[in-house]
Length: 371
Image 1 (cartoon, rainbow, N blue to C red):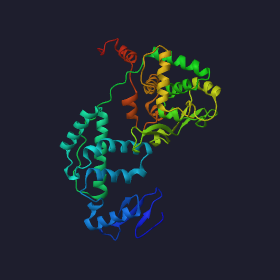
Image 2 (cartoon, helix red, strand yellow):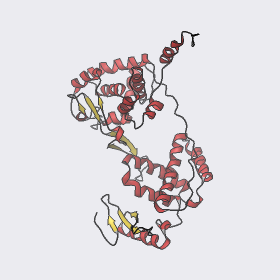
Image 3 (tube, rainbow, N blue to C red):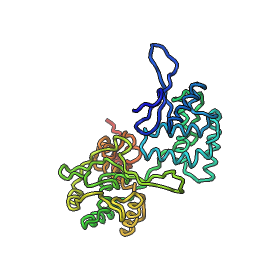
Image 4 (cartoon, rainbow, N blue to C red):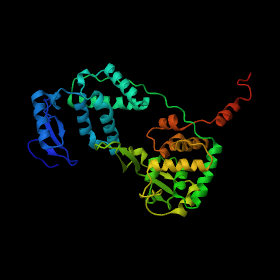
């Protein structure tokens, strides 16, 4: 890390970092905290403000929500995936800056948060889950400032309550059988899109994972598929309306990076189509993005005479089928790439009515004997 000036460094990520010695807490240990900026001069100014005004002077001005949010985004950017940063930045610029940017941090409380959420709810018609995400960005930025700079503020609670996930209504077995038969026939004829969708139905991949899957990640000798990247289209703030770009990156968590055995029903089809590059290709690009795959999937459902349903339900159907066939939840959780088996149980495992009837039939005799 190249050094320029006293305790001011240029980091590998291109930002400048200034280190300020804090008060000695005893034991002869030197403690430092850092301030960041895009230029050497910006960091130097922030260091001067911090030394003059104390710990809470690390970001100048009247300490508004906008200043805190900017600092949080700037300093944490290098610690997040690009997609995560893009999501936070979009929420900040579209909703938080216009609604709370000029509000002093000391004035932020639950009443103000409730009014803010009510206002954007009326104007934008957002879902409760997305409004909760917006509140979460505000709370996370405030918590960061309080912890990092020891700023004396009260942190409001997220005012949008979390809701239990609704049970997904996955298609019936008859409909899935029709779809599976069509996909298998077309994949046998060389249709890569149908092969990719069939992989999702039989291996439980996410849509971004199947779009990012390349033949280099499919090991036919060892009969496994390595999931090591994800493809997404994300919004960017470049001054243009609704600007987006495609990102191909490693999965967000270590558990999402996984190796899945290929089921026998897919192996022959994969061997027949084996090629190079991305498994599912676009018309103009070497890959097909999630939105394109969703359009193609809707067209396939129409050809099969099936009612349209969400692509992600294929993943739900896979998990439910695995439980029916006796998979243990731990193994299934690892195949799906979950960090906790509770996620698998709560979100992806649905007991069918047929299964419930089979269980209840065990009570065909009296519950209790007279013995």
